[in-house]
Image (cartoon, rainbow, N blue to C red; front, side, top):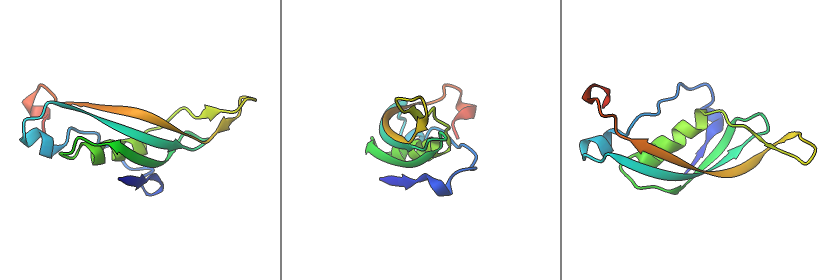
Length: 100
């Protein structure tokens, strides 16, 4: 799955535990993402490299699009665009009131 982040900038972060996983009693998961980060620290594109299913991959990608990153730097110290791999970890809230 690939998400183009340009349309998501300014969205409110909705980084929640996926409802599908909560209904199935899953308590944690990890998603592997590749994120193309612009020189200003905004995510431009996200690739889901490893998705355990149950809504985790899509939620991690959407959350990653609205996150601000520290950009890579050139040899001269100037911010530059780059692509990096991240692990996005989910853990179900212990409080039932927080499980939407």
